[in-house]
Length: 91
Image (cartoon, rainbow, N blue to C red):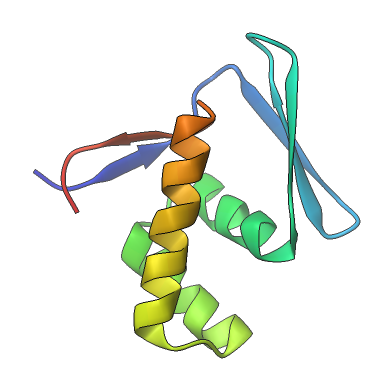
């Protein structure tokens, strides 16, 4: 089973001054992501996979591919723990 990433329907977001401002409408919680986190979020919102998001970060931020994958996975786990991303399946 392939990994599936999604943003729940109760989550809204906007990009403000290079940062992602995420609002969880179920509990009115506000989350702000820095520039790198914002880029991960933008790519996630476009429906890209972990590998594709990491590839974009590798190119855009000139970070090693393995490090980009690890950073994306860590970011997504944190977002999942906050309840703003749903991850199902295996990587």
